[in-house]
Length: 183
Image 1: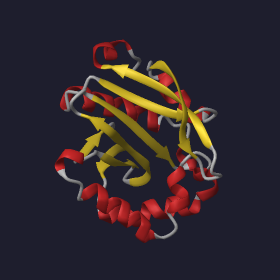
Image 2: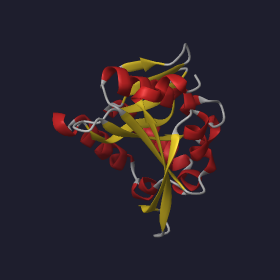
Image 3: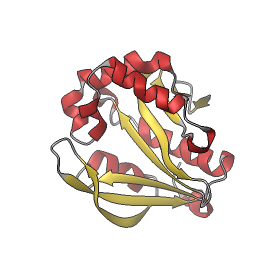
Image 4: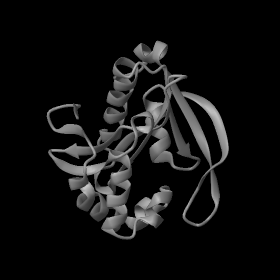
């Protein structure tokens, strides 16, 4: 599946052929990425990335989550996905990460908006969450910019590479309120 954002920016459902590009990006930007992304410390070889992709591709239907590569002019620049989707209550969370060299171009903001539309219109969900580590201003600015509502702080929500737990800022967008956000 490909979700087109504009002529140069697309989201493509992850596939095994993406393993090398994903791993190379993580490996070459390890210091930058591991500050906020716990999985980086467990991604030591391309086979670790292949194992992750395999779990996504082979997930049973009731556990399936959409995981997309973010591609600018067909070049891999990051990942964005739904996670912990609760289909009964119509709630999902969006997680994302982007290559350091591709920051501050609106790539994640545009990708999040497109996935919100997909969640509300195609998947018929009612609420989208974004959780960001307290202090991760680059990530926190995304939901703020897009008109998400600040829900509060989730204490000790995620363990970082140094073994310390960090609190998470929780933001949400409701389906009924999506028309008021900026595009």
